[in-house]
Each structure stands twice: as structure tokens, then as C-alpha cells.
Length: 86
Image (cartoon, rainbow, N blue to C red):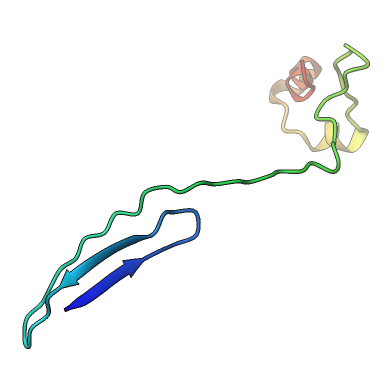
């Protein structure tokens, strides 16, 4: 007679007593570990602003090299508006 016990971090342990093993036989024991009590603390030490909250102005500047390197169909400068955030 054997006792099988399984445990993992963040889960409750499970124990199955009285498992009988005999020679040349296989025994399958399916265990399901229920979630345990988890206490986790997340501390944010720095904050990077994802957007500029002080100005509602949107726009950008393209350099001369960026303009020359862009494949513009018909060399229409108005197609450059797609490269600037709106």
C-alpha cells in the first residue's frame, strides 16, 4: 500500500492514500490540483508616460532624407500626410 502526494506552488496539495501496487501491473492515478491561496503584490516603481497629456497637438516632422527615400506615386507631396500621426 502506498500514498501519493502532489503539490505545486500556487496550488493546494492533493494526497491519495491506500494505493495498492502489484508486480507487473500499471496503476494510473489522475490528480487535479485546485488553485490555492495566492497572495501576490505588484509594485510599480517608475512610470513612463505613454502619450503627451499636456498638449492636444498632433503632428510630426519628416526630414528631407525621409521625403526623398519615400516611394511616392506621381511625386504627390500630399501622400506624405499618411506618414504623420493624425
